[in-house]
Image (cartoon, rainbow, N blue to C red; front, side, top):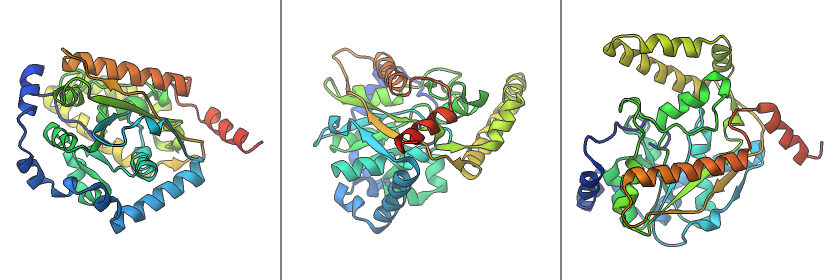
Length: 320
């Protein structure tokens, strides 16, 4: 899900899922989410959309000297699916789509977990919608741009724990799916047919955009590892409850207790990864993941969170 927890993997093989997606009824999906099928101009010219865009892009320019790289790789016309990593604070999620729209005129329809949308229905007015495979396929077939974050909340916790030791390491394993790697976005891409492209995107210094003293203190004491060890030893119902508690507290803490850090941030768009004849969802997922991780490694140069290094970059830009 884009900015939220992904659904459990479908209980069917890739061929069955692809066949199911090839028969999606647009009328049914459009009836459920009519705002998603508005023209790009209708969404981007909305008062609420323009207001939020000015707020978040203004904040990004002042606080993070925000810039983009590779936006020209995205198609001027036709569909595209963007896939990226999940930061522990999610601030980048509200900046990237607005930056893409400002530079290209295309609205990025973010595919969000249904729970997030249930609590925040207003997100529909800035181009975010419940992220089902059916809605993604339908929107893409209409020529729209969509974006998702396969890692979901598991990736948030992976990046937040251990004091950010693995902050720039992808984690697409599903807790609901007993640790199996997610492949929903790949099933969508494969159903679009050979030639369809998925574009990796990555925020350089994205993890350093916020500092959370509560999380850092918790991890310094080793309580993140202790909580994980204890919860995994519990009976399944209690383990599930412990997981829900971890999700809820981490989300609330990351949103409301994180402090902004004035590090420079660049949004990178990578080369499109093309669906090939005979691709399975698993093969295509692995190819996209490899491409995204390689771009993150190249642009960031490290996999750990490092505030001093990122702040140093900003000071050098200022000539200090």
